[in-house]
Structures are given as C-alpha cells and as structure tokens.
Length: 463
Image (tube, rainbow, N blue to C red):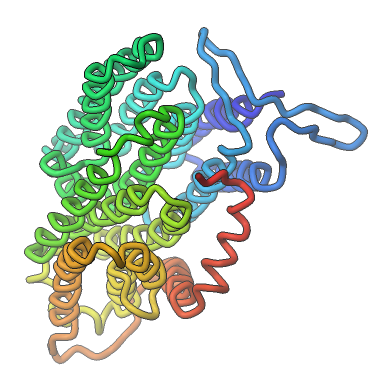
C-alpha cells in the first residue's frame, strides 16, 4: 500500500461515488467528513514509509506510486500538507449544508483536493501545472449555475489560471535541460522569470488580480470562499517545493527582494482597493489578495522564523476567510444585498452575522485580541531592520481597516429597529464557534497557536 494511493486515488474514487449520490445530502456530508477526518488523522499519527499494524496484519506504507509513467511521491515532509488540506476540507464541508451550498460542492471539492495533492506529489515537478489545471477545470461546474450567464470573473479565473500552465511547463522544461549545463546562467534566469510569471498568474499578483474580486462578487460565496482560501496556500506550498528542489534559485540574490516586492504590491493594492469597496463580496476578494501578500513576505525572509510564520498563519487565515465566506453566503440566504447602501442598521436584525464579518476583517488586519495579531507582530519583529517595508505593510492594512470601520459605521446606523437574533441555529453554531476560536487564538496565542505549532512542527522540515 502506498501513501499516494491513500491520499490521492482513494479520495478521488470516493468523490466520483459522491457525485452520483449527491442528492442524498446527509449521507454525502457524513461520508465526506468521516473520510477527510480519517485521512487527516492518519497523516498526523502515521509516519509515511513505516509499518502500519492493523490487528495481526502489518502493511508497509510506501512513499511512491507509479501511474501513467509518472511518479507520485508523498514523504514525511508532506504530512503537514496532508493534515492541513484534509482538516480544511472538514471545516468547509461541515458548513456546506447549512450555508445552502450546491449539492455538487462536496463531491467536486473532494476531487479538487485529490488533484491538488497529486500536484504536490508528482515528479517531475513540472507536471504539477497540468494537475492544477485539471483541478481548476473541475471547479468550474461549482461556480456555474444552470440557466445563469457565466460572469466575467469566472471567465478570467479560468483564463488566468490556465495561462500559468504553459509558463510553468516551459520553465520546467528549460530547468530540466539546464541541469546538464548549470553554467548557462542566462537560460536559468529566463526559466526563473517564466516560473515567476506562472506563479504570478496563479496567485493573482497585480495586474493579474482582477478576477478575484469579480469572481467573489458573482458566484456562491461559500464556494468561491473555499477556492480562494485553499488554492493560494497550495500554490505557495508548491512554490516552496520548487525552491527546495532548485538550490541555485533558492540561493539566488534576487529571490528575496522579488518575493518581498510582490508581497508588498499585493498588500498595498489589496488594501487601497478594499478601502474603496462598497460590495462586501468584492471586499472579501481583496482580503484574499492581502493574505497571499502576507504569506509571500513570510517566505521571502528565507529563514526558519519566516517559514514558521507562514505555516502558522495558514490555519488562522483559513478560519478568518471561512467565517467571512459563510457570513456572505448567509446574506444571500436572507436575501440581503451586500452593498453598503443596503446595510444601514442591519446589525440590530442580524447581529451574529455582521459581528462575524467584522471579527474576520479584524483578524485579517491583525488587530489586538484577534488571531492575526500575534502573526503580524511576529512578522514585524523579523522586519525590524527594514522600516520602509513595515510602513508599506501598515499602509496596505490601513486600507482594509478603513473598509472595516466604514462597514461598522453603516451597520450601527440608527433605523429605529429593535435588537433581535434572526439567524438560524446552524448559522449561530458555525459563526459563534468561528468567532470564539478567532478570539481565543488572539487572546491566548501561546496556548492555541502555540499548540497548533507543537502538533505540526514534527511534520515539517524547515530550512
């Protein structure tokens, strides 16, 4: 038995089964939650390459699976990704039914996770671009509603994500050729440029970012929230794998300044445009861009502390965006237009829903008492020698903060309505739990975020 068979092939087969029984929503939910929880726990507790004992039977958990002439390799260093992506799936699947997500959401999401795992595992690494493209194609039916026109954001999402594939494939081909002649520096630098362009399309770096707020404003908020919160971290983890496999690129003098510049551009542009937004769905899209910029700056530090900050940030960021996306989906469920002009005083009617949106934004910004505060503080501590970089980061987050306070002022506007809790029990459970965890992570970071790190640190090899 091999690890790729367990974490790639088996979930993919189950996703096909769930597709045919998607109308039985409760059964699909139970199967998907049980499967992803089991896969996450196995990755957490069982070393890959060791012996698995099931009663009197012992089975070796191999690292490699040969399929269609390609090698899929999952090793112990990949266990963090396996735990993270499967627990993330549990989180998103749990809220799928009560957020009124389409019935096809769970089967297709499970298939997407399988292909993203395959993209991380495939060797040679250039084939990861093809597997990511398959995952993007699978995501399209989730975004398109029958009888409704395809929006510009969804088209641009597909176009920009697809444009990344030829750049990464060509870069991979050039890099494989340069291994035989490493002295050809011009060819290697050109390959690095192509690789950078490919990741720029994937991560929606300015000016390729326009599809994120557009797609967020068009589709079902919970579905787009899943894609926009899962795809960027996977792309960044694939990028780290590339860097670790290409020592000359990892040690290149231009890498850290380039990553820092791109991260700053994403944070500043995301913050500036967020400050001008009146549509909460588009605001969500710019928050995603800011989160990706934060991660890039952490990676650009090229230190153990920077990588640790990146890995630590994945769960709080996922939780913040998940609560935000669920609240936006609830707005649609209650037939509330997410434009600021229509939200005056609504915090009195839907207090938990809008408090959750504010909590999510405050956590992403990194205000005190919220989950993102200790992470941002840790990043600033690593950047103490670069004051200009800290100022630019502050400017970006100030734009998002301005958007959050504009929303808060509109919500508390007096309309004469009495305070009442009108959210459903499912909404209350999901949102209150999410808000509570975000606050606990902010108030007791050493206990909660520190505990997360104690669990995941043994699964990582940080260099």
